[in-house]
Each structure stands twice: as structure tokens, then as C-alpha cells.
Amino acid sequence: MALFKWSGLFLKRYFYIKERDISHHHLMNICEATVCIIQSVLTSVIGIIIVLSCHHDVMWATNALTSWYALVLASYFVHDTIAMYKVHICSLTNVPSSFLSCVRSYVKRRALLVAHHVVIAFILCPVLVRRDGIGDFFVGCFYCVELSGPFTNMRIVLSRFGLKESKKM
Image 1 (cartoon, rainbow, N blue to C red):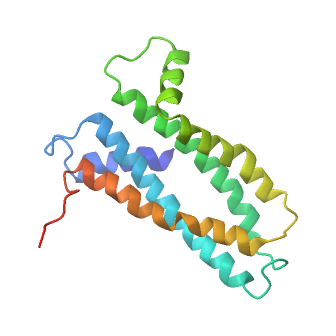
Image 2: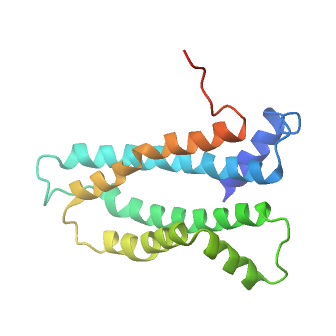
């Protein structure tokens, strides 16, 4: 959450968000994407480290980062669910009066993404921690799936700054 807040302060101070006429909703969306980019890069690097250290025995080789990072990943997915909720609230023109109505509208709008985050944080990550050190290589491969994350989130950032379209040749 601190990185989410710091990225907002950094963007306001150094990129002159007011001069670019970027709304608070878009600023929050950029902050969420920034945290996602950093998390994706970190997850991919850790996945590569695990794969390289366990490639000699894909079933029984272990790496201490595997279980440790599963806990970090679980906390990230909880954070990202909360950050997406905050971005959702900023996007509403008429914010519902009760918290439950806000959560209901958020889950209704982003049901699949919320389900994805909840399943990973509360089912998959605990399984990764309690798997008794079997298959760290495959867990590292699973972490490498995040390699696409920085690119998809950069698309969001570029879109918010109006730079999504590239020059045609």
C-alpha cells in the first residue's frame, strides 16, 4: 500500500499531473498499474532464479524463495484487490452510500478479476507454502507467467497519458 501511495505522490510532484489534465481516477489507475509492474518484474525475476536453481532436478530440487515468495504474492493479491476497489470507487460518479453497496458494485463490475485474486491469495498461495518442497521448478515456471505483466500494465499507463497509439510507418 505504501508503494501505491508513494507512486501517487511521485506522479503528482514530478510529472505535473494537473498540467496533463489527468483525473484522480486515472491517477489512481496509473498508481495501481505501477505497483503491478514492479510486482510482475519482481515475481518474474524470482521465478527465473528458482527455475535456474532447480533445473537439474525438476521434481525434488528446492529453493527457499519458492515458499517465502508465495506469502509475498498472497499479500500482493490482497493489496491489489483493495487497490482495484479504490480505483473503482474513484471511477463512480454517484458513490453508493453504504460500504456494502460499494463492494457489491465493485464485485459485479470486476467479478472475474476479483475471483482470480481471491482464489490465488487464499487457495493457491497456501498450497504453494504447504507443498513440502516438491516441484519448486514448476512453481518457478508459474511465477514466470508474470513476464507479460509489465507490458499489459504499461499499456494502461500509456493509455492514461494519451500515448497508446504508436506512429504508423
